[in-house]
Image (tube, rainbow, N blue to C red; front, side, top):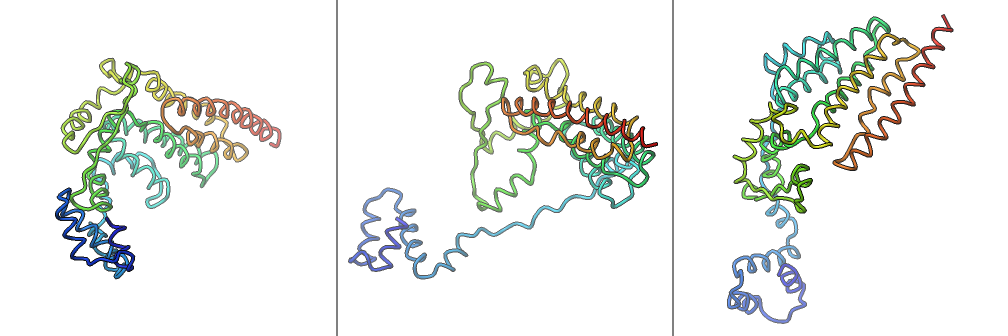
Length: 300
């Protein structure tokens, strides 16, 4: 009907607008919607700027990033980074995310490990923070893997609904389509649709996040979830292995190793394939790191 309106406005339909609108009304099928479409088609040809303005929803102001809470600030201060530095900003933002993702203890494990790396790097290479920044970024990525509880949190995030309203208007409806690995492994072949009315389900699921990784975590028995948890431990062990040999000769390779989780992308089998790539590249970079260490020792 939009095209009919455009064609009429261009003189391609040799009858009156009144006749066309009468025919649309008598047809009876979604008459009001079709009349509006016909008129918008005419407007697209006669006054496209007005049409564009009419179709652009009133935008809500973007949600301001909240100032870190006292709890976040205290935890982030465990990492003794200069206030306003990139490392301080990375840690503060990710500390808040990990508290929301799991709890304070989970975030404390994160900042404690980052501080260990920062302190070791500062001792080995005064003024350097590139390794600590890489660890702050990529340890967080591994710790905040997107499981069922995290998907629920993200869907419940006020910014998600605000972005929908901003892009599609205040009356926009949406469906979230999910295909949980556990249900897929049990034979479910299709995605499940959730509307805004499903929010109580997501609230319940998010409230159960503290079961994550425990024997009561029914989602955690899936092979991909076990792999994701193992990756966190393996990453920390790999970084711990580097720290005693950290020097100006090895810090560049150590930083490459710390940033390797960036290649772990995708879901399910795509992610599994990228984890194999990650582990292969990790072995190669370990050899490169040890060679740099030997050269550094020989240069002394």
